[in-house]
Image (cartoon, rainbow, N blue to C red):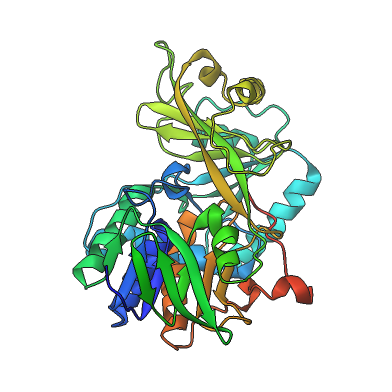
Length: 388
């Protein structure tokens, strides 16, 4: 492991890998990426549902998704490695006049930025997602350019391309300390040695607050468990009739229940409003009954299938549902790329590029000030309303 580096990135998920790749593209190649696990992308990156969407409620989040999805579309051509990506759309089911009005306003903003999003009827929703039951649904928000992507493929693509450009990746390496001298980063201590560096990137997902504390920074990022289940369809399920024949992501906005095709199976889940923050990633099998109860009203075929396996991952929640990105005011050279509240993977290509530009001293073409850590003290934050 190097003893000196221009930049040390802590965390080998999608954010860390994207930042490393984009730093290398800017010519900053004396970079070390540290991952405590034996493999990259095994934390929150490897445990998410893979959804990518333009349907957000704030301008900056929409812009980040626009850029990220454009890169995913040409990922192999630009980065040099393949990545699975299915653009079959996102469909948000709306059951109250208030939710329809909220999404109508979101659509106006999304369309102003060039995104084709439509408010469709319940009947059109069923046509888009065969097998869907729309009892109580009064409208749905649909964007055909949203989709499902491969988190591991994206992360490993960025990492391999970064390594090819000279970035050093150290796996099975735990950060134990961050040295700050005169309010400036000066080094990182690991269980394998110390690296002298003027710049550290905290890309540790739900563990971000712990790592920030090593530099004396209080970071309001809270880990929150989410469960994902995989169900095999019943033998009598007929694709395209009572079982989706594409990868469309369907989300019931009233309950947060969602599903999409995962190979021949269905991936599904739902947020638990009573979930207690913490790092426990044990699957909540007792919560499955609550999910199935909602599933019965939205995708009856799913209930008749067999749950083959499940896993749990951690959202890195911020107080307003928006990311925390940029340099910390109180510690020069300490950069954050945290708190994405469930939409980090889908925004990692753009945010990694923008943070790399900031580190290199360049101006950015997307305003990152709404994501600054100091927004929480100034009261200038605008919450993201569309957190799934």
